[in-house]
Length: 354
Image (cartoon, rainbow, N blue to C red; front, side, top):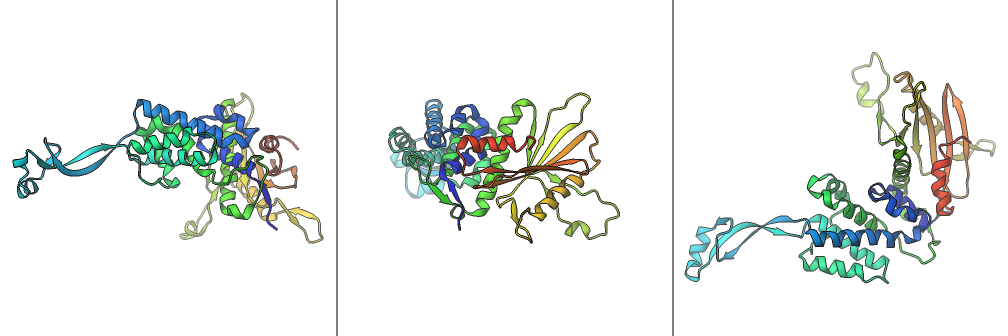
């Protein structure tokens, strides 16, 4: 039977995972307690950024053009000019680059404003701004969301980064809006692979937002190397790699070992029925976090490494820990069916003692 997840909580995870949460966290923090207001809040941020860019000047690009003009622009096409006898009419045919506003970043903003107009139908501001962009020549299709990370890295788009972040999040909120925000959506309809990535990136975004101001280093997708010796020629081609979901490094404290928490996220139940009916932890996941910790044993003597298996849950609560060969390992769940405040606090309590 499909596991139901409240739409508002999916929106909350999308907020935690978004670049907007990183770049404008203080402006959207109210949505942690009221994710039903998230589309309206993000739409307001987007509208303010678009209005600012319209006032200061939209990002422009260049497009090759060729036509008859009355003064030289770019390269003169002599053959065309002569064949059409344009000089008799006081014209010449030229090929040149012209400045246009129809560039991917502006198309992204226009498409997000059109989405905002559907998500927040009682606010005409968003449709009006979308029409202003169209009148400015922004008429092309919305770029794929997969191109957004490259936009964020472009130095020429530094002034557009908040607009890009808000537009990306709005275009991600594809789940139909509801007034109460309590409508349940079966998880498979969202695609298990998508929800797995969403939960992982939400955990990373949440911890980065909450812990970075306190001096923690929060990293994502760190790759580990095995401590090997005397490898055979072909072992490197077949030995599986190790990639961590989230790593938290606490600030240094004089005279003490630095605390490091290795977090592995899954989008499955943290337990399963055992041979005799009792619920047990999934052995494969236990072995995985154990391998992460022990493969790095001794590499950094001043670092005390812990493990955390973090799973989403609906109606299931697990908060347990054990010390294995000197390494603390926790097993915790975040309740996706809880109220938004409890869901957010689940990420916090997962780091504390059981």
